[in-house]
Length: 116
Image 1: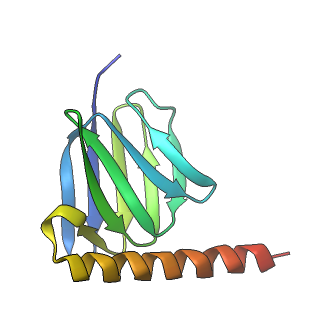
Image 2: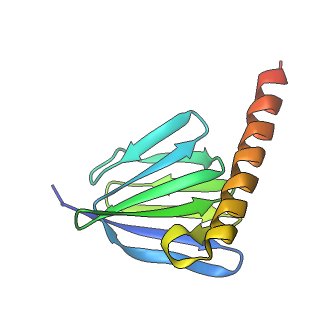
Protein backbone atom coordinates (compact mmCIF):
# COMPACT_ATOMS: atom_id res chain seq x y z
CA UNK A 1 0.00 0.00 0.00
CA UNK A 2 1.25 3.49 -0.85
CA UNK A 3 2.36 5.73 2.01
CA UNK A 4 0.91 8.89 0.46
CA UNK A 5 -1.48 10.17 -2.17
CA UNK A 6 -1.93 13.20 -4.41
CA UNK A 7 -4.09 16.06 -3.11
CA UNK A 8 -5.35 18.90 -5.29
CA UNK A 9 -7.30 21.76 -3.69
CA UNK A 10 -8.81 24.07 -6.29
CA UNK A 11 -10.77 27.31 -5.84
CA UNK A 12 -12.24 29.72 -8.41
CA UNK A 13 -8.98 31.69 -8.10
CA UNK A 14 -6.87 28.66 -9.06
CA UNK A 15 -4.96 25.83 -7.44
CA UNK A 16 -4.57 26.52 -3.71
CA UNK A 17 -2.60 23.33 -2.91
CA UNK A 18 -1.20 20.47 -4.93
CA UNK A 19 1.22 17.90 -3.50
CA UNK A 20 1.70 14.37 -2.25
CA UNK A 21 0.33 14.05 1.31
CA UNK A 22 0.16 11.41 4.05
CA UNK A 23 -3.46 12.12 4.96
CA UNK A 24 -6.17 14.75 5.32
CA UNK A 25 -9.03 15.53 7.70
CA UNK A 26 -12.04 17.49 6.45
CA UNK A 27 -15.67 18.05 7.30
CA UNK A 28 -17.91 16.35 4.79
CA UNK A 29 -21.66 16.22 4.52
CA UNK A 30 -21.77 13.31 6.98
CA UNK A 31 -19.32 14.82 9.48
CA UNK A 32 -15.58 14.91 10.01
CA UNK A 33 -13.63 12.33 8.04
CA UNK A 34 -10.04 11.26 7.78
CA UNK A 35 -8.62 10.20 4.43
CA UNK A 36 -5.51 8.02 4.25
CA UNK A 37 -3.74 6.33 1.32
CA UNK A 38 -5.82 3.49 -0.07
CA UNK A 39 -9.12 5.01 1.09
CA UNK A 40 -12.21 3.60 -0.58
CA UNK A 41 -13.51 5.83 -3.38
CA UNK A 42 -15.95 8.44 -2.11
CA UNK A 43 -17.61 11.60 -3.33
CA UNK A 44 -18.96 14.04 -0.75
CA UNK A 45 -19.94 17.60 -0.16
CA UNK A 46 -17.46 19.59 1.91
CA UNK A 47 -18.64 21.93 4.62
CA UNK A 48 -16.77 25.14 5.45
CA UNK A 49 -14.04 24.75 8.06
CA UNK A 50 -10.52 23.45 8.51
CA UNK A 51 -8.82 21.13 6.06
CA UNK A 52 -5.90 19.57 7.94
CA UNK A 53 -3.20 18.11 5.73
CA UNK A 54 -0.57 15.71 7.11
CA UNK A 55 2.72 15.70 5.23
CA UNK A 56 6.09 14.37 6.41
CA UNK A 57 5.02 14.39 10.06
CA UNK A 58 3.77 17.99 9.95
CA UNK A 59 0.28 19.43 9.74
CA UNK A 60 -0.85 22.18 7.39
CA UNK A 61 -4.18 23.88 8.11
CA UNK A 62 -6.19 25.50 5.34
CA UNK A 63 -9.51 27.18 6.07
CA UNK A 64 -11.84 26.26 3.21
CA UNK A 65 -15.34 27.23 2.14
CA UNK A 66 -18.12 25.00 0.85
CA UNK A 67 -17.30 22.56 -1.87
CA UNK A 68 -17.05 19.02 -3.11
CA UNK A 69 -14.48 16.26 -2.66
CA UNK A 70 -13.71 13.22 -4.77
CA UNK A 71 -11.38 10.60 -3.31
CA UNK A 72 -9.87 7.48 -4.83
CA UNK A 73 -7.25 5.24 -3.27
CA UNK A 74 -4.40 7.33 -4.68
CA UNK A 75 -5.91 10.77 -5.36
CA UNK A 76 -8.08 13.39 -3.64
CA UNK A 77 -9.53 16.37 -5.47
CA UNK A 78 -11.24 19.10 -3.44
CA UNK A 79 -13.13 21.91 -5.14
CA UNK A 80 -13.86 24.72 -2.66
CA UNK A 81 -15.24 28.20 -3.07
CA UNK A 82 -12.38 29.64 -0.98
CA UNK A 83 -9.13 28.61 0.71
CA UNK A 84 -6.85 30.51 3.10
CA UNK A 85 -3.69 28.79 4.28
CA UNK A 86 -3.40 29.46 8.02
CA UNK A 87 0.41 29.61 8.16
CA UNK A 88 0.87 31.96 5.20
CA UNK A 89 -1.84 34.54 5.79
CA UNK A 90 -2.41 37.56 7.94
CA UNK A 91 -3.81 36.32 11.29
CA UNK A 92 -6.75 38.69 10.92
CA UNK A 93 -7.53 37.23 7.48
CA UNK A 94 -7.37 33.69 8.90
CA UNK A 95 -9.66 34.66 11.78
CA UNK A 96 -12.11 36.25 9.35
CA UNK A 97 -12.03 33.20 7.04
CA UNK A 98 -12.56 30.88 10.01
CA UNK A 99 -15.50 33.03 11.19
CA UNK A 100 -17.09 33.02 7.70
CA UNK A 101 -16.59 29.25 7.46
CA UNK A 102 -18.17 28.62 10.87
CA UNK A 103 -21.13 30.88 10.05
CA UNK A 104 -21.65 29.18 6.67
CA UNK A 105 -21.38 25.72 8.24
CA UNK A 106 -23.96 26.64 10.91
CA UNK A 107 -26.35 27.94 8.25
CA UNK A 108 -25.95 24.79 6.16
CA UNK A 109 -26.49 22.51 9.15
CA UNK A 110 -29.54 24.51 10.23
CA UNK A 111 -31.07 24.27 6.77
CA UNK A 112 -30.41 20.52 6.68
CA UNK A 113 -32.10 20.10 10.05
CA UNK A 114 -35.22 21.84 8.72
CA UNK A 115 -35.41 19.72 5.58
CA UNK A 116 -38.27 17.19 5.85
